[in-house]
Image (cartoon, rainbow, N blue to C red):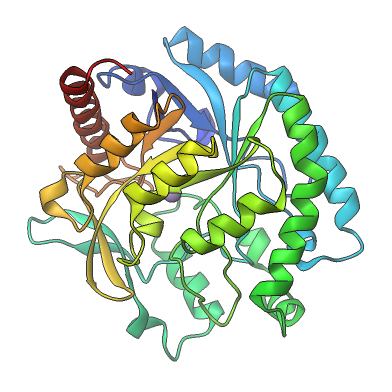
Length: 359
Ligand SMILES: [Mn+2]
């Protein structure tokens, strides 16, 4: 496996590549071209520059998160074909820059949703949290304001203000769309894009819905094992794969994550791992916690064991962390707790490899 750290680039991340390099066991960065509006072509040149910059700090850059999918593709509008062409060109350019894995999601409008970006925990640390009670009675606009007002001035991926300006029109466009219809639009996208990804050596890795439940009546199609089965069957190719985000899938305790990893790993469809622990208080009431198994609802030992069992050799990143030690930064993406999480995962990985023999 390669241990990765999500990095928002020189302009927009207070964390430096030097700091990331100093995290024990850190192999690389996962990043994106944040300046390019959704739907436009990603050129190879800035990716190559980022790769060179990373390599100066002894880090590889082989994984993108995310090339976002334009809403017109999710909506199945006639304009989608032009955006799909752009997406294919972006993948080809990414391949030219040495990219191997591309994460994406197919969530309508919102990439992810939380009701609190700084929920205080017992020890004074803060974390991201979700409580469905707090969504009731709110409008999508309320939610957008809450997220943007509490992000300490940092851009939040998936909540770019310009993307959300047309919120009303977007909700109108999705009116009446059910899961089946959204799934058809995903299949249309994948049938066009996956063969091209395969041809240039890119593995696509769809991210689960976060949280894996309908919010504001929008359809959700990447929630559980059954949904993943349907997606895997849309195009029979290893390039049609998954990001297994333990915090997203795991916020539904019905999802057996080690089983999901083994099942889709054996099909060679598991390409990217987000490791995050959550404490689930009741269905759809959860908060994020430190990675250690005993602290949250997810057993990280079982999860890492499942990764070992499938011979996983792709990217893993510690997903969101808490804010600890007085750090101020982009909610979920501080340095300290993610570094601790990476180290815990590296410890599990080493121990399992020692006990079970090298992969
Ligand atoms: Mn994730």
